[in-house]
Length: 129
Image (cartoon, rainbow, N blue to C red; front, side, top):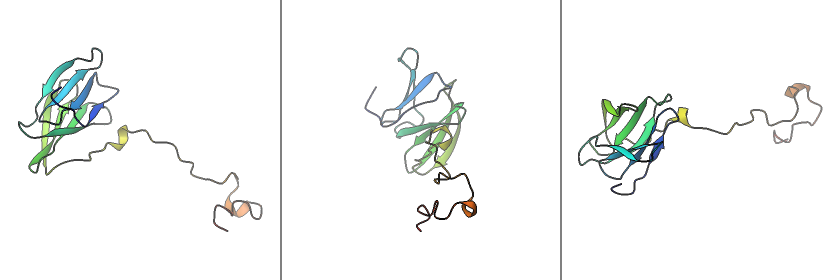
């Protein structure tokens, strides 16, 4: 790889790992062989970074992090550009649909009874009483 990058991304439905190189290039690595199979240059001499995937993994989104930048959408399997959306220094396309979050208990009280039916004092500690 040319230089150390910042983002390495993949999706469970794609056979590739996408690596930014802190340059204008994105390197595509085959998951099975761990070999670089392609280098994409979305915009010559403009920093390409921050790869994200659509929920189904069909498309990869690459930021061209420049004042006159863009989000470049690639077919994540054919490795071909599909569309280019102009943006100024696009970053933070965090795809919440592809992230895993811990489950949060909605009702912290151990009582299965509604608040009005609880025994006197039960659950009041959580309410600050």
